[in-house]
Image 1 (spheres, rainbow, N blue to C red):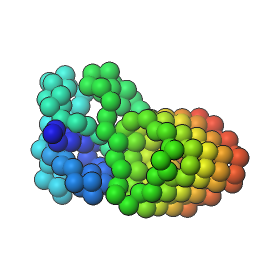
Image 2: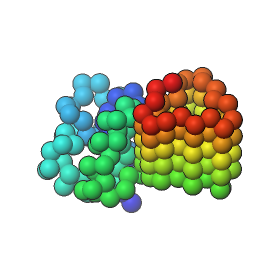
Image 3: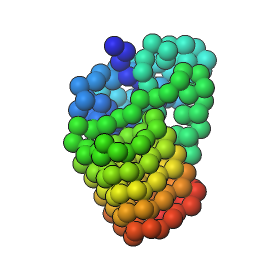
Image 4: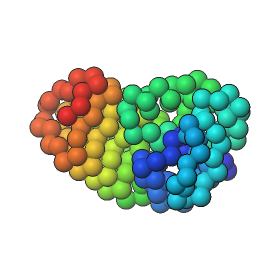
Length: 181
């Protein structure tokens, strides 16, 4: 079984590391634009993910794009997908996910997340710590639902949008593309 490489290594990557650890998976390396002096998990630095040689080394890993910024995560993800195929999903063992959820790849489901029936989630979405996504919501690619946010039923969140920590979005609301709330 391949180990996991994190693409980007800062705060968001630390959360992703813990999620994979909760699943019993091994994260052993990271890429970033520079080698990090702060390396709390003692991961191997593979180099800058923009370097073609790093792509070749990444082929021996599964990968997860652990970049918090929605637009940057999208840009990096699309480049890596074209070179390496689909990224892993990060699913914390305490997340409660309806069996009827439909989700893409490269998504993060942090500790305490609750996803209820018939939710559709795109690719590269962050469902951060303790957020609740109620029935029949649709979350666009590379959106971020921050810690403690609650989306009531039938909410639509557009691609690249950010729903802030502790927000409550009432039922049936439609939020457009690249919106910060």
